[in-house]
Amino acid sequence: MPSKTGSPRSEASGKDAGRKPTTKGQDVNGALRRAYESTVDEAIPQSLLDLLGKLD
Image (cartoon, rainbow, N blue to C red):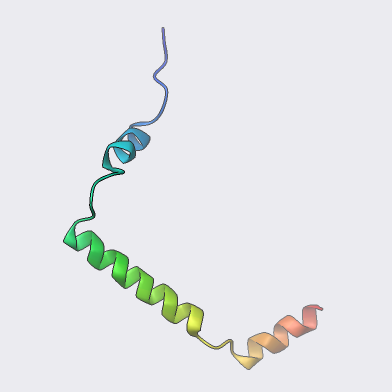
């Protein structure tokens, strides 16, 4: 019996690959991007830097 290759998830993503994101999707994308950028910009606490220094 022949097996079906690929998963339904990958087939669906192929169909949606060229589709423009919805407004709700854009809102979620923007919120995630802002959360990521604010996390990247945070200073590393000195106590964590001291702990990492002990590993060297």
